[in-house]
Amino acid sequence: MMPMTPKRLSLPRTYNRKLLRAIREFDLIRPGDKVLIGFSGGKDSAFLTHALSILQRHGIIPFELGALTIDLGFSTPFDHEYLAEFCDGLGVKHYLLKTEISRYAFGEENPEGPCATCSFLRRGATNRFALEHGYNVVALAHHQDDAIETFLMSIIFSGQIKTFLPRTELERTGITVIRPLVYFREKELTKALQFIDFTPRPSPCPVNGRTKRAETKELIRKLTGHDKRIFNNLAAVIREGRPIELWPPELTTAEKRRRNMLK
Image (cartoon, rainbow, N blue to C red; front, side, top):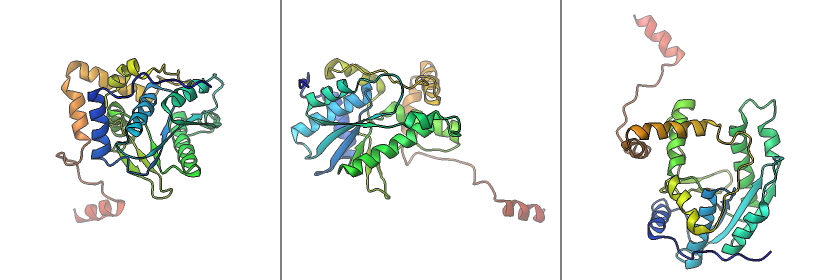
């Protein structure tokens, strides 16, 4: 396999500023960390791999870096070699893990639906692989749009007010999950394809583009089409410290019974 030469050995100033802001503000990468990137072959994880390889090369923080691609077992051919060549050109060690996750996610007896099951199994496979290969940090390529979509999905579909965190420490495994792209908008990562010399691989998932996340993304697009402030307002509300006024917790059965007796 012939090594590729990366187009750019530095990031544009605005990109570099957002990456370093997230890393420093949320203490995402510490000296001596061994970081494993979840590299799916999409534009977001490709940019993350490119960006962290530059950060490592410049020695701003001394850390080790690898990238893991999980083959979910779909029948559609997936170009693993292209991903390996991309990583090789960046000096990043690439791993391929073959699984049968798709068979379980799309099984007839799966009550959770394919997306939730696939996500759960991918997280487990990634974390186990990291542990087995000496990585203490798993880096995921979720960006700001993902955070807002997750926030709305939690409210609409789960009745919970939450989103993912930039840094999550998993006590049971000792793995730390980080998301260094939380200050990037998705459109910025699309634009970055101009300078990272990467063509995203199409997703082999048969429900790609027809998920609850896709519906939520479209909802946000329509809302912001009417009022450009909406996205920034949603980005502000996921921060702790914002004013919150919620109803009291629902009464337990015993409390309801006791209050009825008082009337």
